Length: 260
Image (tube, rainbow, N blue to C red; front, side):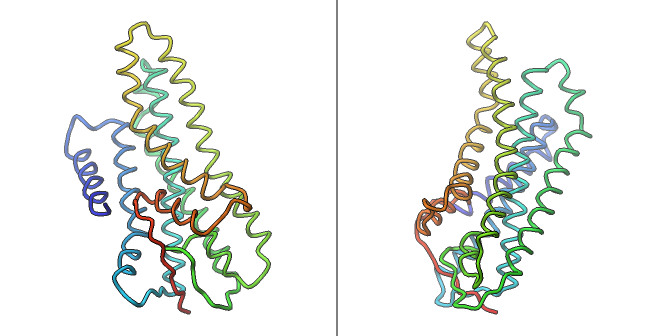
C-alpha cells in the first residue's frame, strides 16, 4: 500500500507537470497535495516497515525529533492546502466568470507559500516544545512513530499545561482550515442547488467529490486523534486512528525504544 501511494502520487505530479491541459490552479494544488502525501507517508511508514522486519526497534532522540518535525510540517501544511483547494472550487463554481482573475497564478503561489510557512513555523515551535521536556526513562513509545501525545506521556514532569497547549494548537490549526472548508462548501452547495439542470448539478458536484473524500478521511481521523477528550483517549485506538490518518490500513502496533 505504501508503494501504491508513492507510485500513484508521483504519477499525478508528473502528469500535472508534462500535460499542457492540466496547467490550471486546480491541478497546481493537486500537485502540491500529492507531494505532501508522498512526504507525509514517507515520514512514518518506512521506519515502521523496517521495525516489523528487525529485532532492534530503536530510534535516536534526534531521529525521533526529526521525524516528528517532518510529520508535523506536512500534516499542518496539508490542513491549509486542503482549505486552499476548497477556496479554489468555491471560486470556480460560485464566481466562475471571475475565476481567472480571482485565482491568478500569483494567488495560487501565495496560498501555497502561506500553507507551507504556517506548517514550518508551527511544527518548529511544537517540536521544540516537546523535545525540551525532561525524559528520564524508560523512553519507550507506545506507538509506531514519534507522535505528540505518546511522547508527552514519557515526560517525567507534570505535562498538564503542555497537553492544554497542544490541544489549543491542534484546535487552531486543524479546526480553522476545516471551518473554512465547511463555509466554502456551504456556498458551493447553495450555488449548485440553484442550477436548473440535474446534469449540470451532477457535473459541477463531481469536480468536488474527490476533494471531499480526502477532506473527510484526513480531517475525520485527525480531529478524532488530536481533539477528542482525554477521558476517551487510549493507546490502542490512537494507533489505529494514526494508521488511518497516515493512509495505511494496518492494525499491528509497535513499541519504539528511544535511544539517547
